[in-house]
Structure formats: structure tokens, C-alpha cells
Length: 519
Image (tube, rainbow, N blue to C red):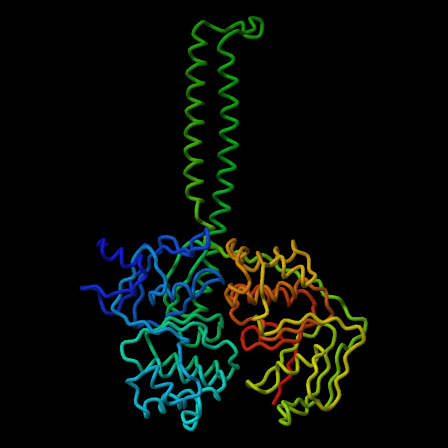
């Protein structure tokens, strides 16, 4: 790489095109980056090449650097190495300026080249009404904003979109619509932890493993199947090498003992027991000892080769240590009973006719469109003052552990948070470590951590609490796929009673035993 290009990379300028580079490629070479306040690098000598026509899913545990990589591509941080491409990057979510302006004006500021009819066409593909473009942008729901901003950004010519978790807080129907829309497009990197969304729209994966970066064609499910197969093979190979190393070391030890015993017998002997020993016997014993010592040296070399072959076999196997939960069993069968319940925002009734019982061991998913009152119902059950009519009966002495959507209250260090929550620090840290917390994340102030890190802190606190009922409101926003599967395994096996809102359809399918649908 020319010295001038290297200097530009370190200065943090945007990646530049290079003469002779195919238009369809993004070439990352020897990329290294660390945050100034961190002792550990996020990336160390990473290299890969992707095509700008791909629908690329970016996968990795929280803290592996997915968002950091997107920001490096857009030149927001200085780094070592090179990123060479002819692509023009556009990052989602983008700045929209004054939200009081009408939506059409906001979208045209995002993509000045877009015609109104083009925006209307894209909006119809996403099931957004045409009249929405005439409303102030600030009055749109989160789902409407996400859909329209994506549409505007895709209308920009020659743009390669870097889409960072677009569907968090979107309901299942909206996620399905966004997935179908993205499948019609090409030329983007999508960061998402929603397995169904990834399977719906991507044709390649870019995976940030523990010790490497890999690029593979196919869907998320295809990659996961290949990953599991590769992990099983690596574990089997590792065990084979371990057995071979043990066998060789035992053989080397026995041969060395024989050699030492033979060497000691060269000088001095019992004329009664060894009456037939001749003068030439000493030279014979020396030659025999030398041969056994040579065999030991040969075995040691074989051991070294086996150890070398074993090196790195398990470096990319994700640690999915089993999480544990110790729920309290409520003495009565019914924890909560609701009959003809209706919830209100001011004078507006958001849902009505809600009837359900929460029984010991139930895992109940609360479903409904955005704005149907799902979070409101959870807060009411947790004791918050919410306007409602109908009957809601909560068992006496019922202990509830609540995880809210909001993470903005997190401040200070992990120890300060654990002390304030009244939970044991060793168990709290152990759970976070099992959920993939990196060493540098333990040192990060909570307010400056990623959203995925914050969500894991809230979940780990809840897992430390002994409760009769666990109430989780969209607990998986920004949480990586591996941690989601850990939680699925935990909840299926723990016998905990759970009431939750979650738009990850795969998680609901794997966990829920019942459903409360709000309409």
C-alpha cells in the first residue's frame, strides 16, 4: 500500500476509490482499530473482500465491533490498514434535521435526487399511506419513519447502504414488510439480530468471530447450520489430537524411563545375576540407550506437531455457557387474573376486552401492533398507575422482576449498579461473562456502552433476582443472536413464569406457551 494512502487511513478520512479496482468490490486489508480509552483492539489485522451487489448480513456478538466497522467504512474513525472501494456509503439511521417539517421535505433532504412519485412508489411497497408524506415528520410512528427513511436512502444512485439494526421496536408485521422490501434491493450491509429478518432478505453473511472474520454465501440459517457442523468437526478434531498427545506423552515417558534405566546399567553389575556379561555389553547398552533417546526425541517432535495442529481449532467456537435462573414458585396456581380489561391513554382507549390468567410455569407472549398497549399492560401488572377499567387481580405477595425497554437510566459502573439493585456482584459478573461480555466492556461506564451491552446488564440483573414472575418488555432489542439462543435454552429449562413482549418471531415460537393478543 502506498505511504500516502496509509497516512490518509490513519487520519480518518473516508475510504477512497482506487484506479483498477472493480466497481463491485469493497476491499478491507490489514485493518486494525482500537478506541483511545481501551487497552484491547476491536480489530487486529482484519482482511476481507465483499461485493457491492450483495445483500450482506453482518453477524457477531455484542461488542465485536459491528457498528464500529460500519463507522470505519464511512471514515468516522482513524484506523490502521486500508479500505479501498468505489462505493459511496450511506449510513442508516441518518440525520433528518428539523422533524417539524413535512415528511416529503425531510425525505427529499435525505435524497435530493428523489422525485415525489418515486417516494410514493417506495412508500406503497412498504404499506405506508401516501397521505403520510404530507404530515409533519415528528408525528410519524417509529415504524413509519424507519420505512420511509430506508426508501429515501435506497433511491440514491450508486449508494451502498450500511443499515444498523433498523427493526428494533417494530412489530412483527412491520418487520416482515421491511424484510420483503430489502429482498427487492441489493447493495447493502444489514446489522440485525432478528433471525427471521436475516433469512428473509440476505444472500451473504459477514461474520465477526472471536478470532477471525469470515464471508459466506447464503442465508443466516445456512450459515448457522454450516457453523454448527464446523464447530462439531473442530471439537472432534481437538479431542482426537488431545488423545493422541496423551498417548504420545505416555509413550515418551515410558521410553525415557527405559533409557535412563538402561544408561544406569552401563557401569557396575552383579556378577552373580549377570555372570554371562561380557566386556562388549557396555557398548551394546550404550547403543541401545542412544536408540531409545532418539525415539524419545522423535516422539517429542510428533507431540509438537500434534499440538500445532490442535492450535486454533477452537478459536472461533462461541462460548455458550449455560445460564441459570432460580425462580420462586408461587404457592397458588394463579398468579394474575384479568377480566374484561381495557387500557387508556388519556381519554383514548387503546385496547379492550382483555382476558387472561397467568399460571405457574406459563411463558406468555403479549402480541399486537405498535401502539396497541403491550408495554402499558406490562407496566400496569408491575404496579404502575395506569388508567384502566375491568378487573386485574394480582396474587398477594407476588414478587416481580421487571426488564423495561428503556436503558437511559443506566449510569456509573457495574459495581455501583449491582449495589443499587441489591444483587450479588460475583453472580452478576458471571452471568454477563456467559452472555459474551468482553473484558473491555467490564471497564466501560454504563452510559457510554452500546445498547446491546445495556440490555444485557438489565437481563443479567433480572436473572440474579429470585421472583415469582419475570416481566420482560422487548428484552432482546440490540441483543446478539447467540445470547438470544442462550436465553431460549434457559427459559425452556428453568420452569420460570414469564410474561414478555418481543417482536423476534423466532424467540416467541421457541419460548411462548401462551399468547395474549391485544387488538
